[in-house]
Image (cartoon, rainbow, N blue to C red; front, side, top):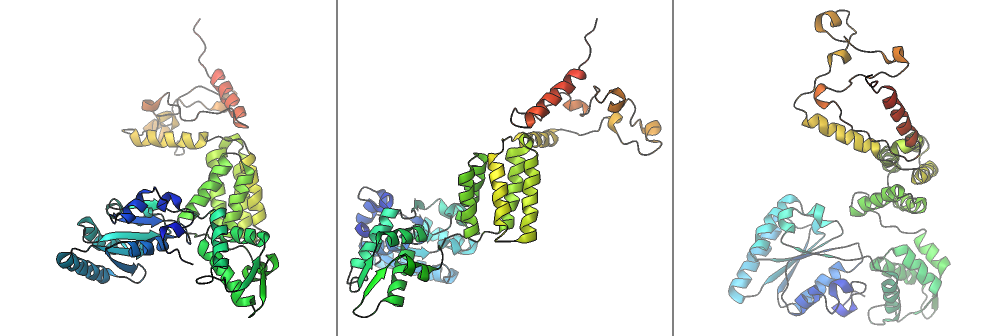
Length: 424
């Protein structure tokens, strides 16, 4: 059921639709080097194969997992000879191009740069991170989307109706509920949808009989939802980003959804717990100091009980953090203080704040002289605690959210009590 032409490519109209830039280039046989980036089962390889049939260029295919530097050099040498004697360009299609190491990319670069090879790469990993900048700058990036419900539904019906390439020669009935289940299971992956249909036929179809594809049958085939989740890839980082931003945005429902997506995808729960601790300090902060305690307790629970039970303390911490008042004043304060340290030409501790644990530190080095012990003054006394060159610097700005409002009021009170008395 692989698409035979651009009109049969489903769900990627923005890439190969009638008015798209890539389609016009393909139809004019005036291609540029490019990379097709998108989830599995969205049509990257299909588009490359269609280009191979539509172009007058010679088409070479190289699997990144098996191709080496010598393969690249040989293809490039043949391409140069082909163009010299026949004026025919060579298109090199590299599947899973993200698996090319730096050496392979460096070897490929000059051939792409001088036009010996017109490169088409396909990848499920973000090329911004997987390809070096020199090579990436010579490629046009096309981003394919996970197929929507309409596209998957159409592909299912085409496969069941096509007698030549699909399952049309079988007497198969499928209800709308079953189609909906498949759509939910495959998460935009057309190849996975076709694999489920094929598994149903191979396992349950009888010669001359009728096969009903329904929810119970799908449950037997799949067992559980098949969630695509690469714990080291782009989707991993996007999902944890969505999780944290949902918590920061005070949306517990969205945060729980992304938590569930990570757990179902096999994410390490300790990784999630670490991010909760960071978020509790960074984004909830002093607006609710208990948030950090709860996040730390959730992390300890994950280590102690493990999954599946650990999902509950993770969910508890997620809901609490999402529902807590927010303040990033701690992060802002420490970042400003670090900047001040880095920008200071010198850092010297004022003598009155120096260490006086040695009995002669005061007499010989002048340490501690002039220090005012706050408890002798009712708990608060005005004196300098910063280096002389940083006097008056303010790093922490208390907010009005949650508990931090009390902190703000306390600091205002301290400032008032330690303010010098007006001269009479």
